[in-house]
Length: 257
Image (cartoon, rainbow, N blue to C red):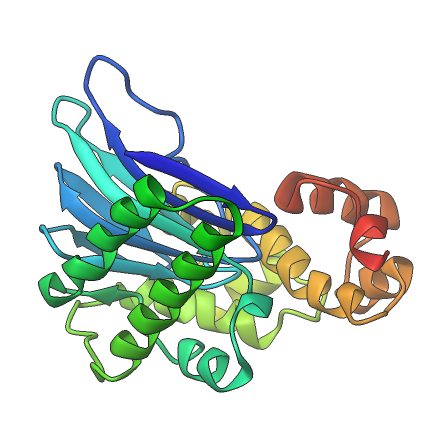
């Protein structure tokens, strides 16, 4: 097992036991990419409107702004590789391919050798050598995934798909529960209930987090935080500021710098 972090890049081989459960399976979204290669355990993984019971060799691929969580049977060992990286870590041609990747890739046992090589690199190399070799393995893995084609055989929840698609299409607008319910033809109580039941989060909290992830791209490209807050329909800057810290982990001015 290992854990390696260098700036915004994180590689890890993790194994959790029933006697020492981890609290990292919670519901969240973030501004970077995350790749999970499942080895063993009893885990249901949810990414947006799709939930899959993971089998050995499965890959879960989470893009920036995608809400996700794992439902873990803590009585069984949970082993996996986890790789986190920002889009800036990839060359432009590969980033374009990565943006088209699916959420799940079933039984990618042919990629297992690449993950096992991460253990070898961590044990036999030092410093910048590890970082360079890890990035090389990541690029090879992503290129391989991009050549697998459409692996999306999992049935999606049509109601959640409809809701999340609506939110993506209106992300720059000021949305209220009442307006969304009316536009989708649901009652407010039904809309809230089905979304929380599937996603384990309130609809409005989900929307605020989505807006923050989208807003960050504008800020790192030079837009002023106050203007971005207005652009994405936040009621006031203080709400945007608090939401930004909660989702990103630090204030918007830090990304501007």
